[in-house]
Image (tube, rainbow, N blue to C red; front, side, top):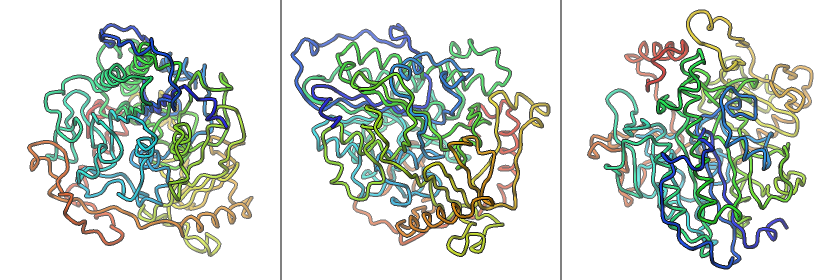
Length: 569
């Protein structure tokens, strides 16, 4: 097995969607630190160190090796010397991707198949799930998380330090200001969101989060003995999620980009690339690198109206088109048996759970019901991928397609339900898959000239789509009518998966979650001894009619790509 080749080595796993520069010696980011003599010791065989870096909202076309207008020399070099995963899938929005990474399960099996976890919802990763870091702790690892959590925090039991991490430093909600760490969940509902372990880190704000999180990772690496105990770090950047904020020096190289949002977004990606460079430098400096595996990934597709680009893929963040679910991913490691290549193996974000537990010499089989597969053989040795199918999702609460029906689903599936599945070369979508344009990266530089050039593809009467992704990765040729046999087979697979799903957990917002009731900070508000008042499926609240016009206006300005989109709306 490939695991035997890892004796005496360490794994560093970088799952990321951002840009941190490759200048490993940048004096303004790399602080002078005393170097312990850990490297002078004789190597002691132990499982590999694991460092997992994830970026937020980085699109398929937002990395240099995909021909982007954004410069990512660090990420390009790491990918070129490793294995690029060019058939890698994630989820279309934040919480689902993060939950599937941590649990190794599809979101239909954790009750998180609808939307994201909102800050005031009494909801979090189910307590009966044994997490990836918990399995690594059992294997003898020191586990640490830095950055964005977004898996719920209404109880202390939900916090990263209660879900398998020995330490945590970062933000609990889905989006914060990059400097002040202020997070808002609607007008007047704002609070501070930077936490050290289970307490609010009041005095540590003011520094750009990409830099702050990188420095914390460096401190963890500096303090740990790489020969004494294997290390797992989950570095989850909030970049390049909105608000669009970047130090001025990163914006200058992109001053020629006409699209203001794209310009700021590119600068944020460059800051992430520099951060990855500095983390990689620290791995070398403190004696980790030769015993490391680096895995890089995004959490969902990019948002074109906020500067991201998934071109030439169809769709965007929040949709089940390829632009929403095809992820950036690569593995970089001296431990790879076959490197400097492109892998077409089908890989899903749930696969990291059993893959990393296997590398840690743990026993993934102890966790029943995993949807992920151990992909190390396919990645490291170019063996055949054990994965043949991906359930992208089944969301019974999403707005049903008006044209969908049980009849159009051949009597076995209601095609009004939003769902998507990939099996072999084929991909099926039902219901409303979401916004389905193909948007070049420089679109929407202003209004109205760029707006009318968008390539629109409106199909209001459809509720079933079928594509051969291997032959048509851009989803331009719907084959549903030509291949009803394939449609029926994939609908039957949706029926199978739906029978295994658990009820949707999407509770109404709890007014006790208001940060004003917690000294102005976001944090747990329900006691661990207090029972949850949840007994089945929660339905979405109807829109507040008083706020309807305001919501429409905000949506309008987002689409116009004006300066207002640089701020939280």
